[in-house]
Length: 505
Image 1 (cartoon, helix red, strand yellow):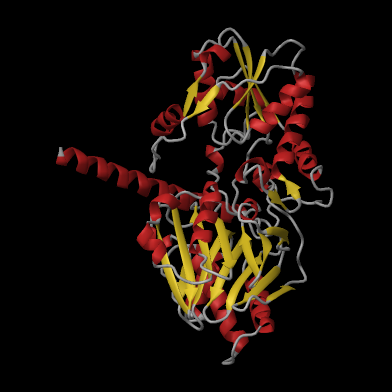
Image 2 (image 1 turned 30 degrees about the vertical axis):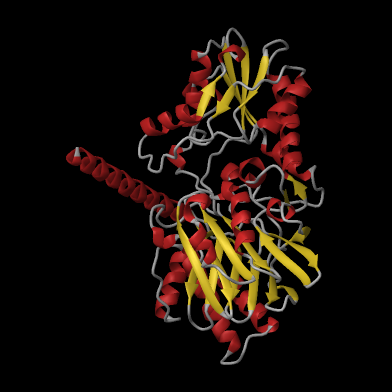
């Protein structure tokens, strides 16, 4: 997952983009970048780390212009530690284009070969986002055929991008001398919204991954970018939009509502906060059928995303809701975590236990999901060390049994604790007295209750159904091999760094 934002304003946009990235920081913490346009010239600064660490006053001063885009990165394809893969990406041919991308292409390798052999374009990094940028650049060149771009030509190029690319992509791009372009894949897997603000000088537009980035700056949320739709805003503020494929069907990623998005966002017409309350209500009904009356004394969330669900579970079951874990928000980040020992240490550093809420009680701990189970195991152990009599663990999401290939950094199948295990076996693995999962039907109903017009969702990590139709067992095996190689490379780099430290000492 990543965060993207683009703006066409009536004054400098550098501060607007920076502040917008701060609101989208939860979507990516590994790198950040901003590009602005002034007098048909791009100005870019990007680097590794949090937004606040990448940009200094001198960097902001070097970003003039009233149009721009920004990106915060969480790596799901390519190398997690390669600064060359920080976005936005840039190409200077044919027009000069910069692009920020949230999602993951599932056919990036075949496209990479096409770029090299047929389109005569060279890709510098392992990033699928750079592949996507070059596909867009090539199709714009073909559609223009030596002439200036206009909205019809741009939309024709995006239609060809949809024809060639598979997977998930929510894109904001800038074309030098023309304007801002945004488009969403034909399934609308990753979110993208846009808003408008009226000013005395004319309308301003803001496009972002989540609506929270609009409301903070006084932009009225107009709507989501539709699946397969492209939006083009020219340098004068002229607004143009077009559906660029006949195959468009809305299948938003349901994990956005479970975990990824901020609770104060509205995605595809559904309030994220409302969906999480609904998840809690649905899960509470299941808990009431599984556990005997009086089996629980207290409901405690794992901060922060599970709080709305935990609160509603407590309300429905008539139990006290308590904050038993305190999150340390100022802990230093653990950048390379090659082994479970370091991951375990990270959990202990990030969460402290309020012993009085556990001592002598039968506790229901609520989390948004259980993926590897490593964090869940450590949390259960912390609760027992604090004196809990019994520890039950509830997940607001169903069992995660399959990798996500559409832009979420899910581990390999063998690392997913739910793969090949029953609920009782999972409970034994994490040390809980019982584990209770949300049903997939209950999760879908919880989101649909917030917007009845939503009929389909991308749920592959729960049911193994990959809606783009091109994800095979061979593809998943290749992804897992690449992930294993990347993990080994990170572990080797960490070991080399530790040896250097010892030698220096």
